[in-house]
Image: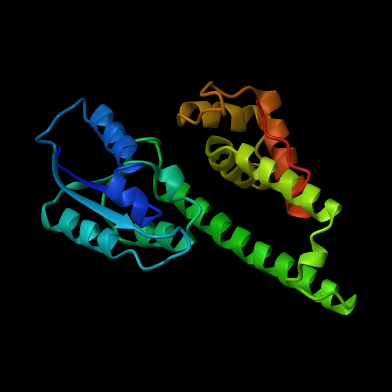
Length: 232
């Protein structure tokens, strides 16, 4: 099998230093069993996750089609939060595989795309609503006086929660919510996750209690993103 490798790092500094890219290249080597001749071309985007213009991705897709190869993505978890990337990948009609999630397919990333887009829209709506309420209360936005102890503590707490939200759990949650909404039991969902190669935060197989917890967390996060607890 011939592969076209695609990497992404978020800053120019990471691109110049190799930080991030080295780890992704290691993942590619492990996936191909260190087959140097298997990867015929490599493309790297140095862009923010919010930037939808992925010029190197477009070139990688074109090269994949030209060589009748397979697009090899080093780490889907670095890209799954960007809806534009996922839609581009899904609609490209190229054969692809993810080193960190080999069982991902167009259905999987289609779910990710919808959830990523929905999450970005919800965050935007909540931010606008919060700013509107502050304005109604007569508070001057951006003023250092607004950084009181409560605001600082809340900000620190949110950063800690965000740091603990694991990409494995986020990908699993997307499938759990989708299957649960389709009427599947937690037993069926648990079996599906394990058959598809999904892993927990600690890289273990899922148990039914963990699946139920992730589902409940997803519902809580939809109502109140501050009260998220991540499964062990």
